[in-house]
Amino acid sequence: MSQETGTLSVVATPIGNLGDITLRAIQTLRDADVIACEDTRVTAKLLQKYDIEKPLVIYHARSGRVNATRIMQMLGEGKRVALVTDAGTPGISDPGAELVAQVRERLDDDVNIEAIPGPAALTAALSITGIPCADFTFLGFLPHKKGRETLFKEIAAAKRAYVFYESPHRLTKALASLAKVLDEKCQVAVCRELTKIHESVIRGSAQEVENHYKAHPDQVRGEVVIIVGP
Image (cartoon, rainbow, N blue to C red; front, side, top):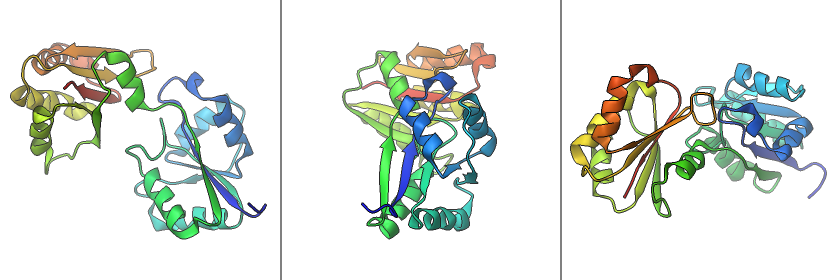
């Protein structure tokens, strides 16, 4: 590749504990000409911890085409752009996937797209629940309304594990819906605040897990990953 070739680095950042970033990710952020991020305040905390000072440009689901066009222009000029999300790996249930798709479609021959792997709530949760997950389906965030109950029925009928992210505001409703359709022998795990001080995994039948959070409403907060066993 010529020296004028731009580079889009898709950089995984910690999902909670700032110590979880990789050495390669730190070096990539230091080498970048600009960092595209969801929230400048969140990314600034990470950069401050590792003494990195770089220009930041906002890129998220509501930032529109203007910032995407700006990022593409920088890549076309041969710049190094590091794409980060607030937590975890960009593109995994994240608007970063759309930016990568646009770059591949419009600048594929002129831009090097590289993965800087690292933390992801999906794999972190799967690793500590003990639920068989050699074969699983990942749903990202479930729809708020339309199609939601249909998905719960699909999960109940499946012969593989299902994994999805959920807002704490809808956690107990999701567990109640699962309790209606799942066999009581089916194991459900709610992984909350992974890598943070209050990390927890509550596992049992959907009804048992729902009862736990009804009894402990103070725990219905933070980032949540739900795993439903086969």
